[in-house]
Length: 124
Image 1 (tube, rainbow, N blue to C red):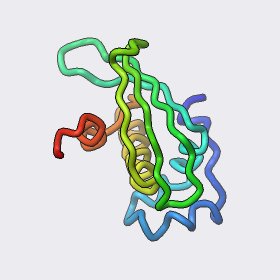
Image 2: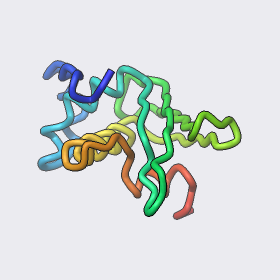
Image 3: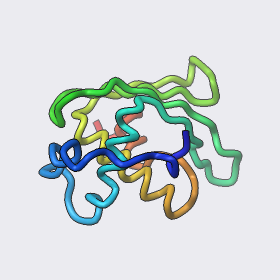
Image 4: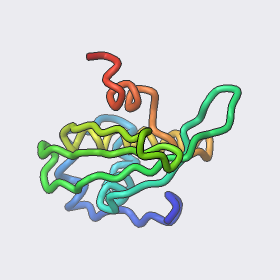
């Protein structure tokens, strides 16, 4: 399923996350929740001056915004290139909103630089 085929989550589902999402990001919230509920996403990591690397991201779907979501990413179909990160579901949904904003701009399904910094534990 592509991002363009997503049906928005209901207003009731979105309202639970409203306190955590600010400004124009709220426009993408119903779609980000819908994507979140799928629990899986295929995309491509953009690499400067090289081929994009395909990835599969999968995660558990939590009930509440403060519940933890464990996201696993595997790059290029290679088990040795697998990474995992845990965060509150509202934080993960915020990253999905950034992904959707980037998709709308560049037509590339990829997470933001800040997501990869968290995934690879660069700022810890």
